[in-house]
Amino acid sequence: MGKDVEAAEQGQFQAKDYQDPPPAPFIDPDELTKWSLYRAAIAEFIATLLFLYVTVLTVIGYSHQSDPNISKDPCNGVGILGIAWAFGGMIFILVYCTAGISGGHINPAVTFGLFLARKVSLVRAVLYMVAQCAGAICGCGLVKAFQSAYYVRYNGGANMLSDGYNKGTGLGAEIIGTFVLVYTVFSATDPKRSARDSHVPVLAPLPIGFAVFMVHLATIPITGTGINPARSFGAAVIFNHEKAWDDQWIFWVGPFIGAAIAAIYHQYVLRAGAIKALGSFRSNA
Image (cartoon, rainbow, N blue to C red):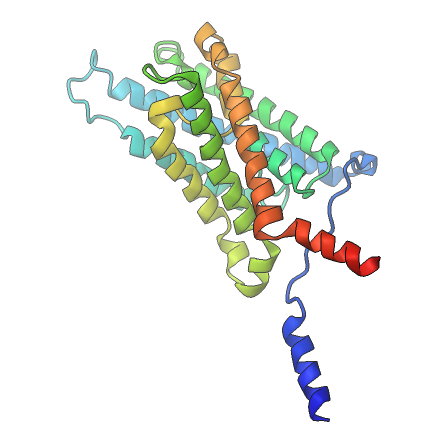
C-alpha cells in the first residue's frame, strides 16, 4: 500500500502541468478558406501601419527639433531615449491589441522565427509578411503626406548604416538585436511559463516592448535600429534614395539570421526539443 501511494505521488510530480500546442502544419491550404486567416492578416497590416506612422514621425520630429540649423540647443526634442520609447511603447500597445487576433507579430523576423519553430504554417507566415510590408509602406506614406516639408530633408526616417561603421558591424548589430527580440517573444509566450505563472500571458507584451526599447538604445547609433524588415523596407520604399537601398540587405539578412538563432536556441537548447524527440523515438522503437 505504501509503495502504491509513493508511486502515485511520483507520477503526480512527473506529470506535465502545461500542454504544448501541436506543431503547425508546414503548408495548410485549408487556412486559405478561413476568414480568421484574413482577419489576422488585416490586423497585422493595420498594426504595422500604425507602428510605422508613429515611430517614423517621432524620428523625423526629433531630427527637425535638434537640427543645428534651426535650434542651437542640441537637447531639443525627445532624443534617442524618446525614440527608443516610441518604438518599444508602440510594440507594447500593438502586441497587446492584436495578440488575440493574429498573435501580434508586427515584424517579418518574428513571423519567420515562429515559422521555424512550427508555431505558424508557411501559408500564414507568407501572408503575414506581405501584410506587414504593405502596412509599413502605407504607414510611411502617411508620414510623408503629413511631414512633406521635412521628410526628404531628414531621410524619411529610413534605416541606414551610420558613418564610421562597416557593413559587418551593422549586420552583427542587427543579428544580435533581433535575437534579443525574438528570444524574448519565445520566452514571454512559452506555454510552460504560462501554466506556472498565471500573470505571464497578460504581461507578455510588456517584456517584448522592453526588448525593442533596449535594443534601440544600443543600436540606433549604428544602423538606426532595424530588427524589423518591414520597418526598414517601408521607409526605403517611400524615401526611395540610393543609400537606403544600398544598405537594405543588412536589414533583412541580419534580422532573419537573428530570428533563426533565437528559434533554435529556445526550441532545441532551452526546451530540449531535439532530446525529447530522440527520447520519443527510442521509446517507440
